[in-house]
Length: 312
Image 1 (cartoon, rainbow, N blue to C red):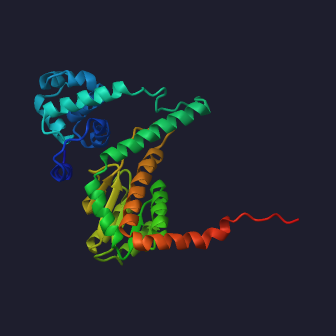
Image 2: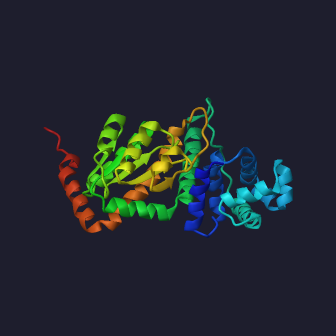
Image 3: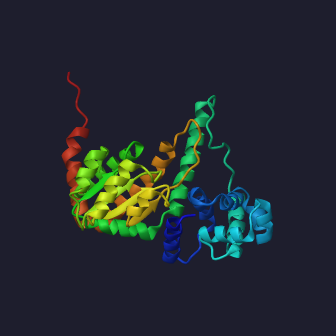
């Protein structure tokens, strides 16, 4: 594991000494597994797949089961936010109890070519509910609060995203504009960079990239960072290159994908939750100006929603 990944999660541990709740464990495993070494991945996957069985094992037993070492098991526990293996076992026991008390989903998340449309609806609903729950469980509220503070007082807010992430960026920009803030979403990478050059301290730049490695999003964020703007990354990969230029990192769920369900679907669901949280936080901080601005926008558009009397 690179030093950058260690720094990211050491920073997170310093911000909160409280281990993640059992219900958040599965979400954290899914978010961090891509950044782990292969041996640590085997440990993480084992505890996620069989929390009850792993909770009954000693550190030596889990090491033997996963073909790793005791040191690897302990390192994995610490990366997941637990002081040691004993704390991870307690969380696993709690997670197992939580799973047994709830109803198991009647369908899986994978969608087959010949699935009836009713099954497609059920599977998508189940998977998106999990994505939302995982994103909420893994979201660092201290990082979110800092991003809200910066955006609420910003002279200008630039938002960068391409593909499906650009749609999320436009959604955030539209919401911020309606409460009186100056916000613009840039899907064109050239325009994104030329606008980022104009940023300065007191401005905010938001990059949205699920992979964390989209060059057309990283470049304008880096430019904004170098100009002194406060930078925010919304990403499914907290160890991705985009975080090098982010003052605040807001992590979305890294949901499992199938052939018929490309990453843009589940990642968009988590991203929309994060930008909604960011928007509501800003609206709360700026309520005295946000409420009149929102009312004015509703009034300006009211005539477009008025029912018209049909001509006789």
